[in-house]
Image 1 (cartoon, rainbow, N blue to C red):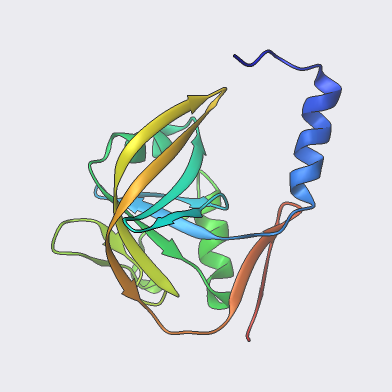
Image 2 (image 1 turned 90 degrees about the vertical axis):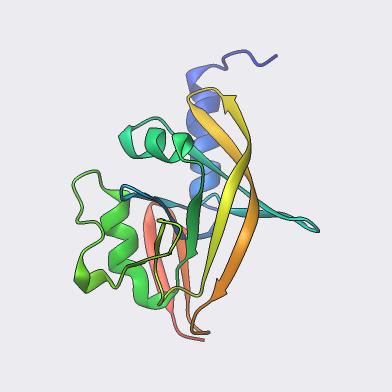
Length: 160
């Protein structure tokens, strides 16, 4: 269906999306395992569903194999946390980061703007990534305010 494009097109594609600011989330599953994602999107409100994509890696593989996970939408106070979970060697699930665990076993960040517990509906391989479409099982709203965006390989946060 898709064919490989020349290297120049691929590099321009990456450059185009570096110019496009996105929200930031940490996706976490029991284990615990987690990663920073800037590809989270709302898919439907009835029934509630969301999507995100992940590239290969140990954390991504464990999340793709999980029966459920949380999508923790981050605010301005979470720049350090976003950076930690974006690095393979970053600290994860430390007491200082403020994590808790749901009765169902998934890690949750009570200080997040919102945490959504979800279960995968579809896994769609595309190139070296997998698009996950997930049904939302539970929504926990955290404190309002502040925004965190990913833009041009950096995280930026401000209070609103």
